[in-house]
Image (cartoon, rainbow, N blue to C red):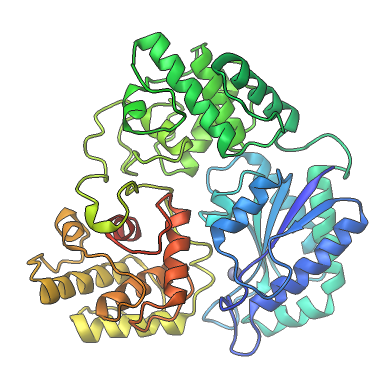
Length: 490
Ligand SMILES: [Zn+2]
């Protein structure tokens, strides 16, 4: 049966966008519940990431979709703009994701266009956590601006038509509820699991679900093949660490080996559609390019250390586009992490920020941050309510100033995050209360994590730090140290 995961955006203390009276978390939930009811009536298996007014971390929303082997994921939001005249519906897909995602998004949006909306803004590409970390074809629908009176009126008046339009667009995308799988095929995953069991002695349940155990099975296969082919002398433990990374050789079009099969299996599991057959052909090359683009790597279609690192969730790619298989000594992982309370965490992860830092986040709060930076640290930021690179540099400058003041760090307060600043950072944790905490909160807020920047490291800040760490492949311990700061300011 087809599984649709519906993700009503925000919730709980995260109100999302609002106009002071009306908040998107409520509209998102109302729409999500109605859409779920409609799709269930049609025979689909529907999973909601939340069905009440609770906060769900961004990464958990993707995990819910991934563990349910969804055929389609739709995140429901309402848009925000400083100008009350901005209006219209818009659907987002992850930059660099397969064409399927944009087609599915268009199926929904084009139907919504005929359901009594004011304006259709089109399908757009962006980099949102819920899209990036979800394996199923994923879309993030902004059903009008919560800051536009006409959009709100139409949302309420045409609510049932909106629900029907979205449901019909989903049905067109994935097909009837009980027919063959439109996305990742459980039978193909089962085939991968059986192959890993047979070839590499993995003991995976052939359940058709690509989860962490299957991923470890692939890494174990990779290690075994690297030992066999190149005498890499790795421990075949299924853990992708620095030694395995170093042992990886480039795979490219024309190659044909068990290593290619393992690469294909991992790509398939990550939601890239190809036939795992051990043959590196055009479809595999396209999948590698798509994966690289979505992960901030140079999309050259050649899979090497960075690509494997990104596939298996370990660090490596510095985001600077360094050549796979080349000299990676410049990667961001430098330095002693012992001050971080996070010995194993690596300063790398996916690129990008939390969901929707363009269209969520309260501009007044960002304006407050900009004014605070100007007052405290002599930045000359326009208080325009937009968390842009200049604002982020202002936060770094504040951080450098505070590190000098508090710890005599003697770093240049130039707003540029570099090795000296990284080295000067001390861990921040629950219970701390100072200007450094404020700066951390400001940066997290700017990245789309919802908390009140008040200089007090309380439960909400801890939750935001954990959520940020999890979304970026760091140990989610809620303690912000060098690794966490490095990813925030990278
Ligand atoms: Zn939103």
